[in-house]
Length: 90
Image 1 (cartoon, rainbow, N blue to C red):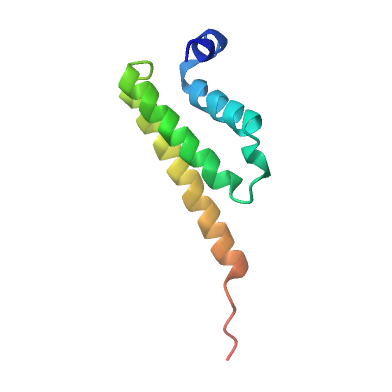
Image 2: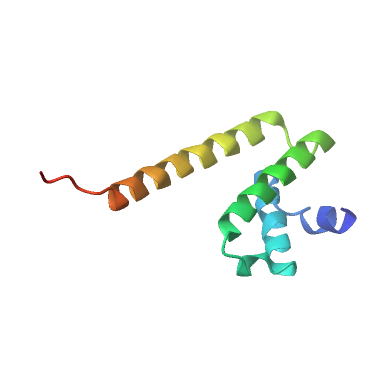
């Protein structure tokens, strides 16, 4: 935790969860997993929750990031449904 605090001292508060998640993805070689995107999202949410509990992030920042992530996921799901939806031509 202390090392993370030292390395993230010059990073904006809202970018800290992403930096920490990327650090874990690289050091634990999680990027090799087939479900790496899901693992990254889980890491981000856990890190945000921890930082919120410790008082390092305010709730508004976490809520805004969660809304942005949900909006992005919704857009991704809509695109994949359009691509993979079978066309009915009867």
